[in-house]
Each structure stands twice: as structure tokens, then as C-alpha cells.
Length: 296
Image 1 (tube, rainbow, N blue to C red):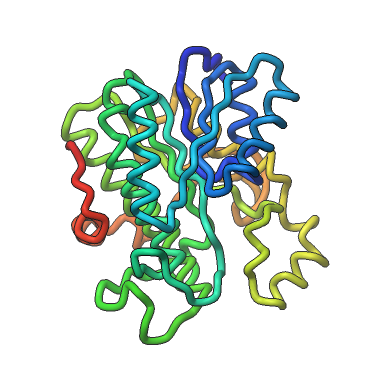
Image 2: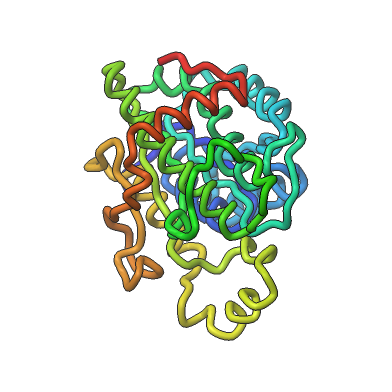
């Protein structure tokens, strides 16, 4: 990884799992890292862990609850007040396979947190990124974007028949649709900022805690054979964020079987993720739902 001294990185969900490993690596290479987390106490513990492993690391903690647009706006305002520029925004936080619940704003929880929360945060911080030469927005998707995933614009709230697996797949598909549309708009604006996506493959993190019982049992029995460590799972995100050869609109994931394990490389995404009409329609709907207009 190139030296990151002088760069400011905001990592959502950085108190545990992939986000913590991402923040650790960036701080170790000299970046000033902001841990944007829902639980401040856990965030402070994560910051202490990073400063213990990397002497002199520059780490701060910012409260951010992506399931509340009020919290997203408050966090963005505080980040804007504290930073004239942001070099890396890593949209990592997420929830997976939750029972049917809604966000503070009435959105289906997985779609509202994984996509709409990050859509709003990125839009509110984008001018800080546009002011930093070579800045990047890295959004973490999943192999789950291929599983039972479809953007049903007539039922974004999943009120007809809720499926936690389908809802997760939809939110992760939305992450890719957002990345590709954001990159198109950045390119049209001739911005030096780029948008990139990544996925961790199968990684041992706390995300599985909301999985159905059978999936949790399978993970407990065979997880070590299928999944890799959170540190390995963070590598696609880190490569997308720091590799000088990265091109806007690329998607990084593990190079092993079914993209479940291995080292980061460019990987393909589903046909649906490349549907331009769906990308643009989702963008318009997301602006309406979040009431966030992008400066591009």
C-alpha cells in the first residue's frame, strides 16, 4: 500500500470487522482516519486498539447512525466543520439478514442503512471530496448482490412479502448501481474524484449474527473452510482505496473460488448492476427519499 500520510479517510462501521481492519491498515500507513460509528463507546475502544498497534496513529471517532437521516446530516455537518478536504470516503458499514424492521425514517432497514444512509452521507460530503485531488468513494457491496436481488421500485419497503435474504441482496445491488452512476456523473463533471466498489468475499465478521439459524449453524461448522479473516476480507476495499492503478467504476473482490477467498482483483458484477436505466432511476428515487441533492 502506498504511503497515506496527509490523507484524510472516513470509514463507516469502523469499530469492528472489515471496517476496523480497513481503518487499522490506513492508519498504519499514515492516514488521518475518522471512525464513523453508531456506538461511540465501541468506536473509542476501536480507536484505542488502532493507536496501540500503530504508535502515533491519527484516529478520531465520529458518531454516525446510517439508519437515521438526521444522524447522517449531523455527522456530515460535524465532518465538514472539522475537515476542509476528505481524500477517502469508505462506505463500509451495513446490516445483513435482519428481521423485518424499519429505519427512523420508515425505510426497510437493510435498504435504508446499506444504501440510502450511504447515499445521503456521500452527497453531503462530496464537495469535500471534490476539493481533494485524487479522492475516492469506495462502497462495499457483496457477493449477495447476485442472490434474489432486484430493485422493485413499486415496493422498496418490502411490504408485500418480506425476505431478509432478498432485502439484503437488493441493498447490495443498490450499492453497485449507486457506484456506477456516481462514477458516470463524476466523469461527466471532469472530476478527479472516482467511485469504486469492493466486496470481501466470505469473511468472518459480526454480520452473520442476524442470519437465519441454519445459516449460522453452517457458518459455525464450516465457516473456517469457506470464509477468510476480516483482515483478508478488507483487502479488496484497501486496494480499491489506495492502489494508484485503480480506475473509476471498477469492482474489486477476492480472486479465489466463487470470489469467496483470496487476494483482491477486479471482478465482474451482475448484469442487473449495469442497467443504466435502473442506475439513473435509483439515483432519482434516492435523492427524493433522502432529500439530498448532489453538487454534480
